[in-house]
Image (tube, rainbow, N blue to C red; front, side, top):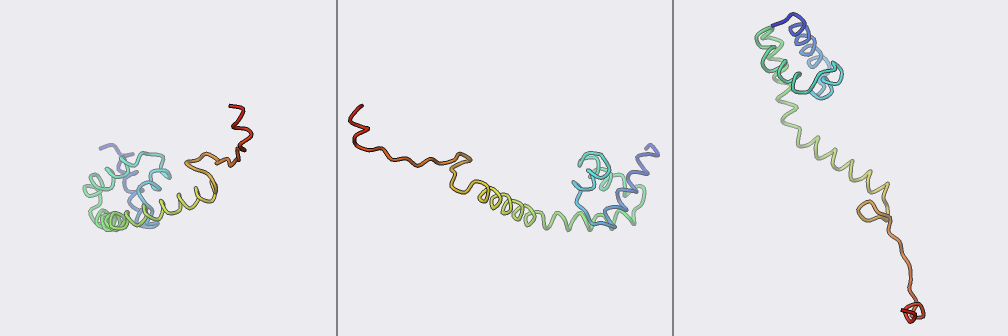
Length: 108
């Protein structure tokens, strides 16, 4: 394993223990993919630093146990935001109310 990968893995491990951020957030901070962060934390870190890997494992398990709550809250916020922005609209289209008089229909 290259030295830069070992260094990145340890930095990511320490970062997640200190901040308790999600894999997605850590990936953005380090400029790598979520898959890379996950592989660093679950496969590489136990080989490099087992004690740190154990701490990280508990954090990842906690995140996994509450992911349904985070997702539900995100969906709730999304639809509340959509409702606020699109009040009076149907599926993103503004509804138009108009009245047709009988006189208008006689011409047809």
